[in-house]
Image 1: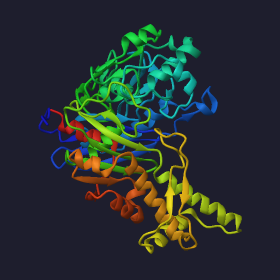
Image 2 (image 1 turned 90 degrees about the vertical axis):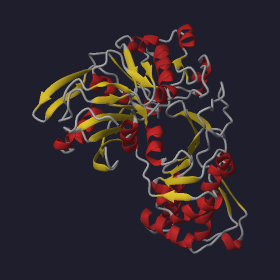
Image 3 (image 1 turned 90 degrees about the horizontal axis):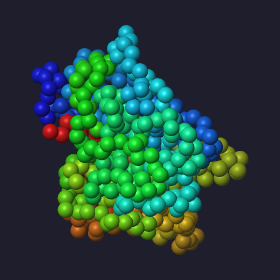
Image 4 (image 1 turned 180 degrees about the vertical axis):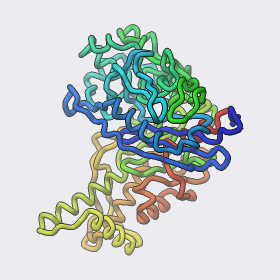
Length: 468
C-alpha cells in the first residue's frame, strides 16, 4: 500500500451491520487490529407494512457509527491512511443527493447528521410477496430476485406509494450512503458486490438491466453509478474525529465478501462459517463465469468477489439456530415437568453428554427452517431405537445432521476438485462446539483450521490495505 504521508499508519474499517456498527483500526505494517469499538444501533422502527416490513432509523445507525469512531484513540485516527466501509447487503435507503446530510463542527471534531432521508428498508423486509415478485419482469442476472432486495423494494414503492419516491433522487445501501456523505459525492457509487445483491444487475457486463427497468417504468435515475469492488470512491470532504480531510475512502463493499476476505488466508482455502445460519464458500478460478440465468433448485450460488473472481457459496438456513431450537425445546419440556433449567446449562450438558458418545446410528435431518433451494423440506428423525434416545445420542446426531446438510449442498469432493486444500472454520456455533467440530471433520475430510475470526470490519480494512 502506498501511504499518502510518512505518519499514516492505520486503515479504518467500518461495518454497518443489521443490529450493530463496528469500527476497527488496522496497523498497516503488522496487519493486526490495534483498536476496535462496537455499538448496537437499536435502529428498528415500526413499518407501515406491519409485521412484513423491516425498517431502521438511519439517524440511529449514524449515531452508533459516530459513537464507535469517536471512541477510538484520536492520535491514531489522525494517522489513518484509508477508510473501508462494508455493511448489510440487499437493503435500500433513499435520499436527495448533496442534501442528505448536514456536516457540523463540534468540540470533538466534524460530524454529520442525516437530513431528509428515508428509513433503511433492510434485507429482512418481507413486503414483496412471491406473487408480487412473479409479476415483475425477470432480471437479466444469474441471481434470483427476492424480497428485501433493493430494486424489488423500489418496485414495491413504485406500485404502492409512487409519491414517496418523488422526494428523492438517490438510493443505495446504508454503507453506500455513508461513503457518499464522507466523500461529498454528487452521485452515489455502488460496488459490483452490492449491486449484485439488489437484483436487476448483470455481473458479466457489470451494469444494471437498464432496458428492462425502463420498460417497466422503474425510476432508473435513482440507481447509483457502478464501481469495481475495492476501488477508491473518493476522499474525505471534511476532517472527522481526527481522520484527516483528504483521506481516501473505498467504495462500500458487501459484508459477506469482507468477512470471507478476513478469513481466507490462501486462495486454496474454503471458509466454513456456522453462526445462526451456515455458509461454506470458496473462490473460483478467474476464468469462471456464472450461468446466464438462475437455477432456483441449485444449492450453490455465485457471488462476485474481487478482481472478476466469484465465490461459490452454499448458504444454509440451518446452523446454530437449529441447536438453539433444540435447547429451547428441552427448556420447554423441563418447564412442563415443573423444573427450571437455564438454557446455558442445557446446552453445556448436552455437549458434554454427546462427547461421551463416539458415534450414533440415530439420523437427524436438521432442516427445521427449510432451505432456499428446498423451501418445503422439513426436519426429521429416523433410525430410532431404545439404545439411541439418550441426550448424548440426540445431540451428536443433530450436530452430524448440520454438517451433512452443508455437505449435501457443497460436497467435499467438489471442493477438492476445485483446488481447495483446507477449510477455515469460524462462527460462534462452530468454534464453541467440540461435537460439531468433530462431525464437520468426519464429513469434510480436508484439514480444518480454527482461529481466524469472521469479521467484516477487519475484512474491509484488509481489502483497503491490499488495494494498490
